[in-house]
Image (tube, rainbow, N blue to C red; front, top):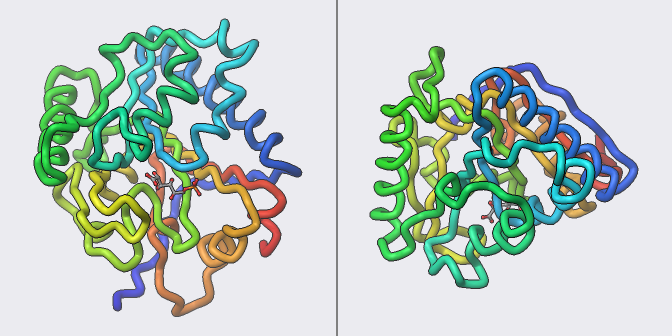
Length: 257
Ligand SMILES: O=C(O)[C@H](O)[C@@H](O)[C@H](O)[C@H](O)COP(=O)(O)O
């Protein structure tokens, strides 16, 4: 097993009293980045995770942000998605639509759901082809450092095993270095079929928020942020951002730090 070194990038670890305080801070952080990127480049590309992230984004669809954010400039993608129908209970698209996208006026054409009629491999290839077209038409820029697409903000969660997106410690997809989007058919976290961004794409993002709350993630958070020498590198420890990686932790998740 390779004990690759953890990524080094500008990192801030923010600890909050409660998950509710994380939600308040995450909304301001996201709204502030939206204002910055819309001013700087006329759009704001946001990459969503599944899991509890959408619920923790709940303050963003309330005042003042509901009124102040320029939603018309947002572009929405998924860092991973289950390969199920978009109206399936396991769909990250459905989760985001119910909890977030149905509550703000992002143009539907700016929301990039997977093609749910394809196989996992086909859906990954299709998503990548669509991203390549967006890069070719300069809707999404390319990182001058890596040559991979550079999204403005990724909002990531972390599993108790240290996975991010659908890049799991015990699966090969975490080592993919060429594809932008890959697929998995035996995800340890159900459901088994998923597509996922790869680390070259994740780590080309300008800003990344790791949103981690709850006592069940305390040990993993410690293992990622304060790794023992020689301990296996967890996928979450490989995350890096080209501008800044910001951890949003509640007291429970930060309790071992
Ligand atoms: O599709 C998914 O399951 C998610 O994208 C996944 O990567 C999630 O972010 C983590 O598993 C954390 O999930 P929780 O936030 O629910 O703990």
